[in-house]
Image (cartoon, rainbow, N blue to C red; front, side, top):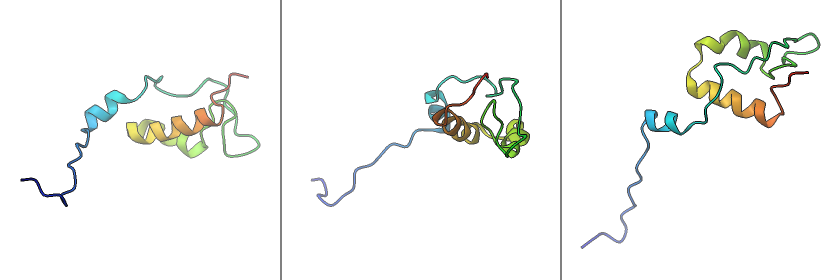
Length: 79
């Protein structure tokens, strides 16, 4: 007999399964329209200057967080 108070077991996807589920993205959101003249956000890619500086050291998960934010904000922009 099963326990009516038992909580269902939820399978947690592995990191590789999670990464495989992420959308294909370019290596970087940079569009070679770099400018942080008026604030701390690049007018081309939408990343902060700190995100630009740390990009190569970021994990795939950290990059995905940035990608989601900049896409929601309408970046990258080529003009």
